[in-house]
Image (cartoon, rainbow over all chains, first blue to last red):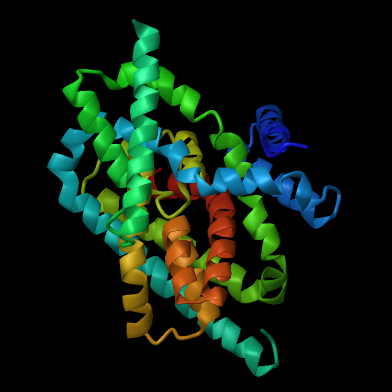
Length: 124
Length: 229
């Protein structure tokens, strides 16, 4: 089968999984994004061996390689928010740097303490 | 002609992306960011040619059509790293849960304290999560997707620069812990940098990025409601 035919079929399959996630959210009204549920569903299907990775691999690699392209148009909406960055640019920078710094340290330290405990017992 | 405008907006988006991708490969640096460069180029062209964001919207809808399946595809790197994930389940999950929660609490409270508007505060909440999922979380929180996407990219750039500095300063030397910190804080951009540090850092970052996105999407609505009422 031609590469592009396979990729198109695989994208269709990924799209069905994504829509199943949305469908479930629509039926249950849980406040979780449908795409996250689609991702979890695909992981479970792969992990349990219900579908082989070859069914989605080529399309997944192609889409992930160009993932940035799909959200650039969303970022263009920034042109409607120029005023906010003019009036609150410094505050936004403070929030982003502080949040990131806390996240880096807390995540790194917690993971390191737990990982070294395990490796002392012969883990990793 | 509406169709012409749609075709034009799609063409400039693809051209800006291709050009920025070329530049970022040629000059690899966190500040030479594909999304920031492309977005700036596109906005400049739109302003010069007098096209409003409203007129850009139909092209946007066409171009983001594949974002849903692409997000589901994020399960693939997670699946490929399943063995590392199972082996180090506790440090990975604990690091992400504590770190991502601390991040959201700090972010929301600081933003509120600095007097930012409610839309801005909730749009900031998922800023450490990969864009497609952060944007969906933002919609659930009644935030603005465009604002969130920009905050996410800014976090990716600043996080990528800050992570090695802070980790070295606080003597986090374990490659596993370093990778988890990269992925939980700076999503895909952090993962790209973690990969340059080493293969363990890279795969841990990839796993952390996926799991942090899932965790944040479950917890953010509840946490934001508690924090801003």
